[in-house]
Amino acid sequence: MNTTTSGQFSRRTLLGVFASMAVTAAPVYSSTFGFLKGSGDIRKISMRSPRTGESMETIYWIEGEYIKEALKEINHFMRDWREDSVVRMDARNIDIIAASHRLLDTTEPFQLLSGYRSPHTNAMLRSRSRGVAKNSLHMKGMAADLRLNSRSVSQVARAGAACSSGGVGKYSRSNFVHMDCGAVRTWGR
Image (cartoon, rainbow, N blue to C red; front, side):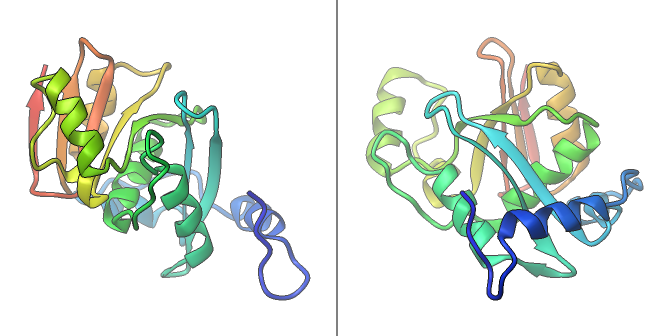
């Protein structure tokens, strides 16, 4: 999506300019925001969806401010693709995903397996698997299930847990990691 900003600059042009200014080394802190501090006051997220075939790479935060248009793009990308329903994703979870990706030191985008889930979708998935929580944070726009082909489930989970900012679940058999911005906790093998 190439949303234009006010004036004559396209969003894509601004992203290129700001991305070129980003600092590449992340300092070690004990929270998501600490990991993101080394990004030159810029936060970006890169994902693709094997379910929809869509890809997204966007800067969503610059100089202490979230970019409304970028958050809308993320909300749409992380929608319940089964019902094409969109909610406002919690920006804290987007920060956790971005910080985890930064720690993994890869340019490969996260594969988004599940972002927002409507209550109907969650109930359907729950009827098929005991691993789906009845009151899943996916239904509140506070969770994502992610995978990286170039990193193991354990590596992705360790990066998520290092942020100390939410829940991280390892699903090694299904080859994905759950990250949410709920209470700090870990589970899985």
